[in-house]
Image (cartoon, rainbow, N blue to C red; front, side, top):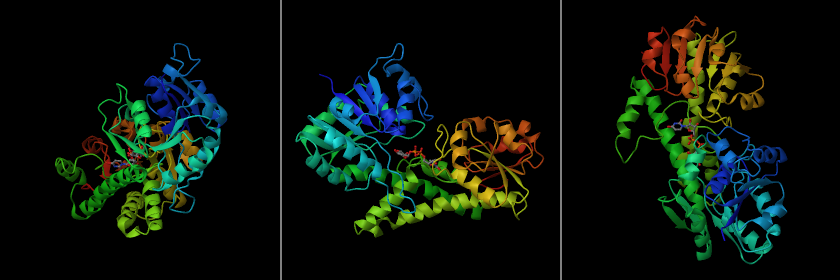
Length: 445
Ligand code: UDX
């Protein structure tokens, strides 16, 4: 009989994983402790913006006309305990308030709720990003609180927001942290589908599986900060970091991805993951091994401050008081509505705090940005944001912004200064239309 799957936590990771599992042919039950989320998902609506996810839900959520009916959602732990052969734990692990360490309270609460409700043989699979050592601790908890034939596996997830569906259905690799052959066999069964076919399946122990995730994100963060450090040098030496990245990226050992210089990385993963990793290394007595991540973090944060300084220069070098700044982009990256630790909003917020009159426009992130930064100004279109601006800051590289017509924008402002914080606009096009175009780590003209 086909395995029955539950997915605990329905954020970017869980909602996508649940829909993907239904797409792979499994019966799936998703759980969240927030009833409004469950209501929305049960109606086939996604509580966040993630391309392709709504279509996938419509294909599978029970009760939707023409759907496979394989996917349902609930708030009941009892139902989850009874239903599943395999339980994926997909709750988030944010940064602790005022600390580097990661907040394990959602993971701990999920295991505490699930364990006593398990009544038969099952595999519990952790997908959340956790400090190394957590899986061993949680496995012990299952031994104490769940039936004997309940086991744990750790199976980190590498999906990128904006590409969540695609990354889940066609993962680069599947990492299975297991403590028994039975757990490995079950996980292989889950992923033995035509869609995941061809993805390398790497079997490890618990700590290695946990570390694969944090080290992969640390590597990506390091790559971005490396190119941003080169941008600092390029700016001082009149070099062009975009050309430099292109040229070094041709070396296959380096590769061209994650070499986009700009205002740096943000979001709910990379910044908090490198900090949590440093905190954990400290606990393990190997903090020296990761001191470079401190530098990675500080290069990254410096980018935001540097953009604020470029904006200050653009409006005359003095104070922002009385100056109108248009900010294009609020989300931490395009094709997402996520504003968690968004470099764009951080820059907008700093300028606002220094007296600037900031107007933000973002294609999908307005509602979330408004909730987080209610005192910033917001406009309904890029054109409205730019109207009367002393400087335009391009801070999230949505394709909509690349397609803007600088000539049309030039008609609603006289200052015509654009600062490209993502090195994604076409300098020739903007300069031709009479704008002063300035990018990060590139020559000024
Ligand atoms: C990341 C990892 O990519 C993913 O594997 C993991 O599961 C979760 O964390 P995500 O946070 O969705 O995914 O975003 P990602 O696309 O990696 O971008 C992170 C940040 O880095 C964004 O703010 C982006 O703008 C920035 N970035 C990315 C750069 O500044 N330059 C680059 O070259 C690439």
